[in-house]
Image (cartoon, rainbow, N blue to C red; front, side, top):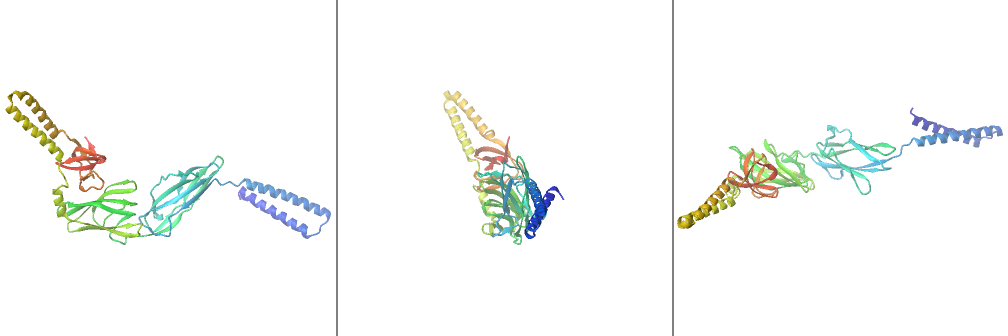
Length: 398
């Protein structure tokens, strides 16, 4: 038995004996001498009881922190693949400070994966600390593990255990058309279908989504597919996805799960290679008309200067000098006017420099390009005499 338990036991026993003796004095008549002895013993036991009680109180460690935890609401369904938030609020007393936190029993049997292992704690105006842990659900039977929190003050150290919870999630894989994407919204803003090889076509689409989990995204059983690029701006995820599929397939259809509507939403992309081929022969890959116009203008001036050199013999020296300058300018435009660079694998070539522009192609191997202009985050490039826009981070300038 340790010292704290012993002190508590003796204090209880002394109180019991004291109470019993008081009852004896009240119930029986005793002689004066005996009564004096009993009273003396009673006073002694009262002092002992008080001493032990004081020792017991001195060994009580005061609380210097309290923790509150908020789990996802159970009045709405949770789904496998969904991200959930667990919010902790820590109240510190007596100048205490947070030292460390540790998630207990984080095993695969819990069917959750912690997404932000280095979650930070923020202080509010009331001096309380709060933090949000984000878990991704990977199975039906969910266990949120407890969180151990260690705090210290000038005189004390305390460990708190924030309780965990058990939850139940709904599996969505029974829908064969489901692409393992849960989102508040998911919209295809543009797409292209082109011939990939003799047997297959490739569909490239741009999408915008809010609250989407994309790391498990997969469309049906197509062996060649993938997320080419994604970026989050102001809470909206912009991405580019491609799928290689057999030429006999006339449409690409898939479902995502809308978490706000609690239902599947279908997206259907018709595949029309003939239409896309005609567009590609038109203005989908515009040529560098500005550079061509400059060269035609310089060429016209060269012809004019030659005529002046032939007709006006007195101006031959001036016209010869002007002709030399124009020829050098034309040569510069043809050979040196564009900065060269290399487009990296995965870069998308768009018609205009915007995130929702039509994609003309994806760069599959490092490709040398001529940089002929720029606008905000995009370079205007020329690839094999055709012009498009590529985001700057995908182009390495020489």
